[in-house]
Amino acid sequence: MLIIQPSGGLCNRMRVINSAWELAKKRKEKLFVLWYLCPELNCPFEALFQPVREIKIINIRSLIDPRKLFLQLTARQRFGNDDILANKTDGVLHEDFYESLKNPVYIFTWEHFYPSQDYHFYVPVNELQARIDSITSSFGERCVGVHIRRTDNAVSMGKSTTEQFLTLMRKELEEMPKTRFFLATDDKEEEALLRETFPGKILSNEERTLNRNSVKGIQDALLDLFCLSLTDKLIGSYWSSFTDIAADMRGIERVIAGD
Image (tube, rainbow, N blue to C red; front, side):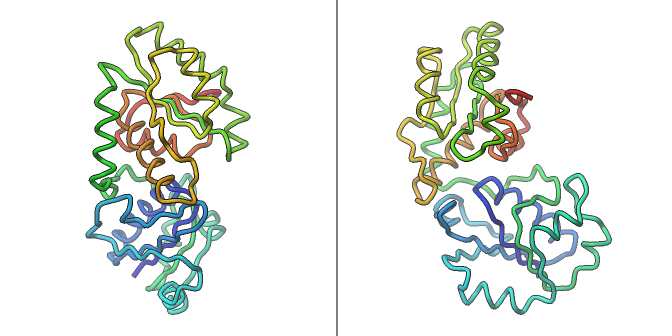
């Protein structure tokens, strides 16, 4: 049995689960996922996604939840983020490391450790899917996604500046004037600027909640993620798992502002 406790925000968790699923398949083991509800992601798995048959999802609201402690303490081996970093190269676990793992294994990490383009686990609940369909129905003949990360990623902010996004968006319009943009951002001032600069060209979830310590905030983040993934091309932020996952879900072209 493989027990994984993915950490971090929504996209970090999604790619950790993908990695754990690849490892579980290699080891022919069942996969248990401890989905921790905390201020950075305070939303149960089933409030976001349809039920997953292949994986056992356990929502926990405390690090001393008896179910979590039982699985952790009865595991024959326990590994944290530093262990994963020390035993992978180019995003892949070393073969001798994963083959040496003793069953059951408990892993806590925000690192992905197997490349995977398999996102079949992540089917939005009906209410969210209806909202996604409503927004994407307005994309028109060509829509480019724009993901601007601002409030909680200093690395991204320093590299992917507003002017760089504007330059790339102007280039898209020069090449295809009918292009529209779906914007996902955690900065309402950035959105206001883009709407002023490109009147009538910006689509977004205008009523979104940015507070990740709420069910609605995480649901709105998931809506943005899926809408970005359904665009024809993505202009994204540097060093952002949200940008990476949005592009990887359907294999769309991505351009990183400032890269």
